[in-house]
Image 1 (cartoon, rainbow, N blue to C red):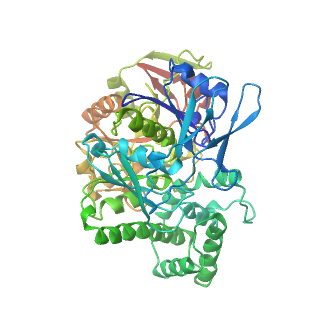
Image 2 (cartoon, helix red, strand yellow):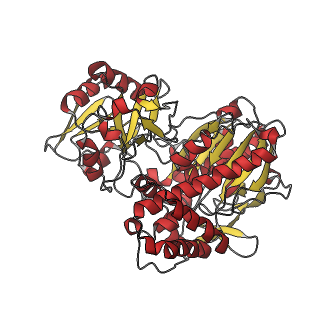
Image 3 (cartoon, rainbow, N blue to C red):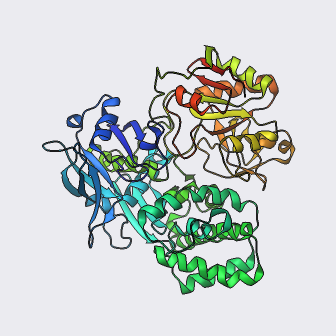
Length: 555
């Protein structure tokens, strides 16, 4: 379980992920919602056919408030509405101590009330590390690997996991820069400025302000180019203010901006330089490690923690040539923390280190919800849906099967639209109330991706940067970002609904690409049902489980 922000509950049987249910994907709840009430936890289990007493073990992620030296806790709300403190494991691990965090789980009291299952807790960093490793292709092959965990509240930490010994070793900090520096710096720039700029270290406020910023800032950075003077100022600031806590991160940001004020640089240049600076720190630290430890050159690497959602940093690590393979799961942020905690128990209880899983393990589409007046439905095959997209050129909400786990819509809770119309980008951003500089992701048949994108390698979870090839930019303008890049999702037969739809669309148009963006109310998780999408009411068409819902009111 992950009980705090990005709350979720995941269950594993033997070595198979049964489900991972995130709070924000229930009932149109707000993004980053907690999952910390007894009634919610039991309701999620009940919805998946389980009761607490049927669980052989429970693991809780160690993301909690500090409650004294070396003590962390979360609060669970009981059936009477009372907040009960529950001790959990620490947030970080300790590199260089020789302590395997799997060997010392934090054991604590009952979670669901009197007489039910006790639980163990593993550090938040350990959960990230195992979510990254256990979901990887090299875990399936039984290979040892390196893992980088870089989260908002921690510096990048390098681990090594050995599946034979079932040993997780925190090797070293790669730098002392907390991942939160990226969004905190962004909040000092006009597009992301909040409040009066006064330093506020309240953790709950920081979460609500900081969590939504990074994705927007990454898109905004493409409007500028890195500047050497800015990079030098950032390096100098790091010697004055080690950005290893909230206050130093604010001081670092203000120091950089004060030094650069006479140059009157654009916010886009500053953000592009920030992206370059932090990505460079990560790659150079990894390069130094491999030079010092040649035995790890060519080892596979998993990236996890919230910073692994940055596709430019991921691509930079992949392209460094330091590792035989670079893997990022579709849930590197805290949405995967419950999975990581469960993996720690899986390793201990079963001896297995490889998790068998699907990206579509979230909640099912809620059936039977009443659709508002003014909507009609007719049977519609995916072939017919492709015809509608090709002929009418309208966006369509697709809701099917189990929801995606992690933050990215991958075709089960998506708005799908033609990419051949340059105006579609602005239209989708307007519908979703997003800034005009935000890109829309392309979804592309895997066999066609190398022809349209560079490198166009398999990328089913939108986690690496690709460039749209020049000869295709005019053909699919809606998915081309201002710097020519794209956050590509490749689709093969393992994603059957999108594969069939894209195949039928290509057959009609010769184009193997469509737009894909998440289907949700602004500030909420994915639509749980057709009725929610109809209430949103911003598109004419909804497709779900073989039926096309059409708004009689038109656009």
